[in-house]
Length: 128
Image (cartoon, rainbow, N blue to C red; front, side, top):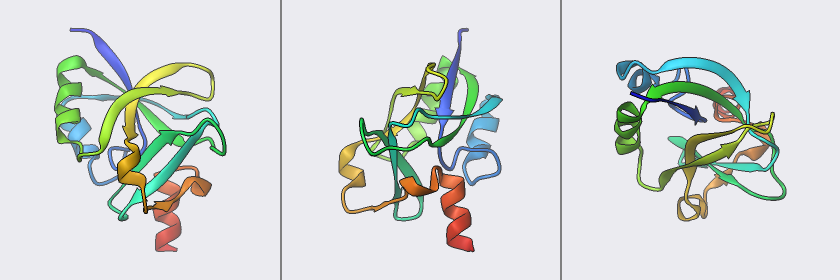
């Protein structure tokens, strides 16, 4: 079965609440990465983030790259909350990978957290 690279930017990351979902499907951590500087991020009621390609006013956002099978990817996508979707993400090195993005409607009225350049930095700031 073909292996797929996927970028995660929130609670699926190592050490965070839903990382167990990746481990349960035998996904393999590949590396840390960053998006290109074209992305913005919002906190969805401090439960999880939603990231969108902005085209302007964006930042580099911290990610993790994982490898998994297409069947495993479907399991992950089925467990994502409504409003998060599958798309292509441009990395800082110019590579494009699949990843989890947020639809615009779930970001409306939510706190923008782009300035923290990632979910982990944001939740650390909130605890501090």
